[in-house]
Amino acid sequence: MSGTVVVVGSANVDLVVDVPRHPGPGETVLGGRLRRSPGGKGANQAVAAARAGGADTWFLGALGRDGAADLLLESLTGAGVHEDLVALSDEATGTALIWITDDGENAIIVAPGANSEVAVDDAAAARLAQADVVLVQLEIPLETVVAAARARRDGARFVLNAAPSRELPPEVWAELDLLVVNEHEARDLAPAAGALGSNDAAAAAGTGERAAVGPEDLATALLEKVPAVVITLGGDGALVAERGADPVTVPAPKVTAVDTTGAGDTFCGVLAAALAGGAGLADAARLASAAAALAVTKPGAQAAVPTAEETADLAKEPA
Ligand code: RIB
View 1 (tube, rainbow, N blue to C red):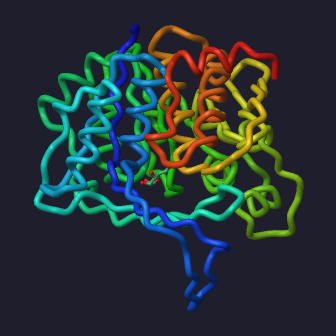
View 2 (cartoon, rainbow, N blue to C red):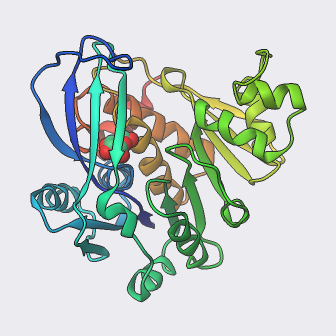
């Protein structure tokens, strides 16, 4: 095990139903049997950093005093994540309502509950100051995102997975060392980076005549604001872009998707762990891409995170 990662974020109990198709407004769709499993972008990423990435990993989050908290703590500790920075709240543990269609695609609604109370106290600040990588998402208060970033030591990397999509205040942009987004999130954030022309900005935001604004254009725009960007491209892998270097596309191994829930989280957790262990960004993204590919082949979020050995084996195979 090498490198230390602190993941700051949400923990949710995922309530999951398979559906023949997504419901439209005002519509009721009959689904399959209800499943209940550990999730939340933060907890998923912590499990991935520890299990698939092999890093010494802390999770800073908040849970309710309820049965869902037990489910999450069991999953976190089972993966080897340190849970001494998990606070207990009078709010209920966060809950995600998830429905999944036959092709593995999902739609998710989150009731944040205790996640709204995730905060950086003295013990958390001390741990954050020892991390090699601080990894955060956007299911927690933005003040906490900023506080976590500011608590890192010089030379540590602040990685933001800007999911779910939210407008970022200048204090967050100012702290970013690495932004990890999918294409939708990149389109939401690129206009704020200010480097797209007005037509391209409208197109990127999906509000204008659609010009061809591809991942490379989005990455170029985002690099105006952040030193490095990874745009995940689902089955097409990921685009890795760093200031002053040519962008690189890392492939995703071909797999049959059963459930894509948490695949992006697996990517982020493994990426953070590899960076904490000293890997370069493109190599870390290659490993992350293999882990995410394995994650979509099984149901559930944390339950689908592969082991470090499975990830390393798949990453070695030619794409
Ligand atoms: O990224 C997947 C996760 O998003 C789910 O586990 C759900 O809890 C929501 O946070």
